[in-house]
Length: 243
Image 1 (cartoon, rainbow, N blue to C red):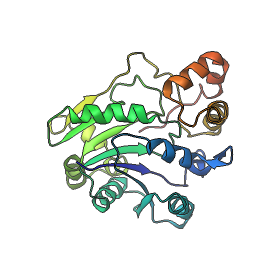
Image 2 (cartoon, one colour; image 1 turned 135 degrees about the vertical axis):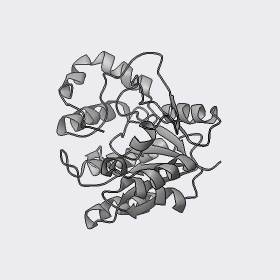
Image 3 (spheres, rainbow, N blue to C red; image 1 turned 30 degrees about the vertical axis):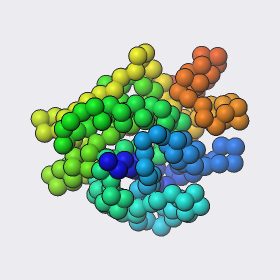
Image 4 (cartoon, rainbow, N blue to C red; image 1 turned 180 degrees about the horizontal axis):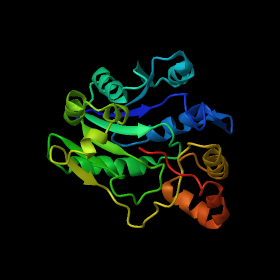
């Protein structure tokens, strides 16, 4: 089974344009994420799925410099972008990630992938987001290529084409849906980058942990924020956009 992580990324963001290439310690956020995802025990290949718009050329440049695969496709039909990226990389299993999660922990990704392999269903979807217990920013979705193709072939609503897995999660009679939960509820933590406040928190976390170890974990971040609880107030007021 060929496991491919597809990370959707683009420069155009309504709240924080160019966020994926904002730098901390001289390195773009997307580079941190790619390095972290690359440490997964189960992922065979990473592909960055960006758009065919000129504004996203810098993302492609980063991928080339890091020798990471990329696919360029529709800006609005993200479901098609994923489907074509999966075909390009001959994926049997797709790990869906988004480029606003630079702190994502490869061990948490692997937990979702391991759970995926425990289920025997052709149209299976496993994530840690159906019932949130993990910090926002650890979001991982894993599904079969057959599930992706089913969604690609059947989804007709614009919103279902814009949000890759919405058709799957709204059709639990067709798809087998499984959730991976954490032992402790950390869902109040927000480690995704969508606003300047989010970026300021991520910058503090990376600045504090990365130079000690580039392989810091979810648990390391929790310990850091327990030490500096006031940091959580930096972006506590941010409301998540509709998914």
